[in-house]
Length: 381
Image (tube, one colour):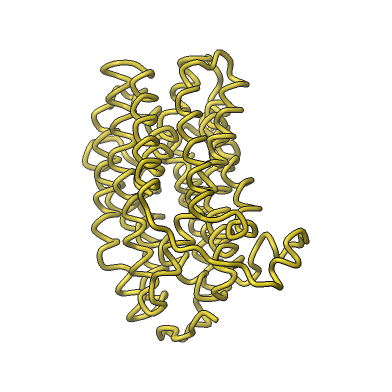
């Protein structure tokens, strides 16, 4: 998971800047160059949840990671913006399938009573990637060239493939009933309705975060604060790492209401602080608040969603959760990028804070007010 996440985060934080420098596109097109990766992931997740266990989990990982390597190699060879977007979409589709497969496999190994804690540990791969990826992208591109950035991501993809080759992966055999309706495509075969309310919260959270991942490097480079950008993402990732060591345990012991509302509010404050920041210490404070909120919210939201479904539907529930997160990351840079010309980057981050506030309201109305403040003891069936 670490190798896959490193490729995703490194290129997500670099691609908007690369598109502007290489193809002289505007801010909205640059944002799409970044988010088209996530759009590809969202499209692939729609089907992989249903067909994962028919294909086989290890076979799926081997195929998608080989495609991952190929796409990483292609970036320096792309000569037009349109081809760049096409490679991003294909690369994103491979990422969506690989990350869904890994998560669905791990979830089946975690005891339900420790689900949030276990998902928090799994998310540490993304946490480390958030620290290393943007730092690698900025430093390699500034001190060497973009080719070195793509060389780094290709190396990460190769390491991930080598790890899977020697890995023993627990497969799940579909039931006869599942096999009989394998070609039937209904809404419930693609998305888990019980998970959707929580997935909407994840989508809104991801929308708010997308403006940080996509536009902050370019914003700080424009302010001649490259070192601040590297420090910001390192602090954000460090805050995520710290909070994920205990937030999952708090969720499992005291309920999701002890974690999710506080986490979302912390993310709101972090985004709002970005809208106000004009000095190093303010950017650091924004990174701490945002990292705490982002790091605690996502594993807890996923745990809530998984607890609402059954064992047989874990792949579909997992793809529903990640589809929501991917959609937020894909839509955000394109839908909100126009604000940069109207309000500047400050207005962009205030808009992100407002979107996460809406996510907090949706969470409370759809789920939080019904939990009763006690930990759920429901078991997957």
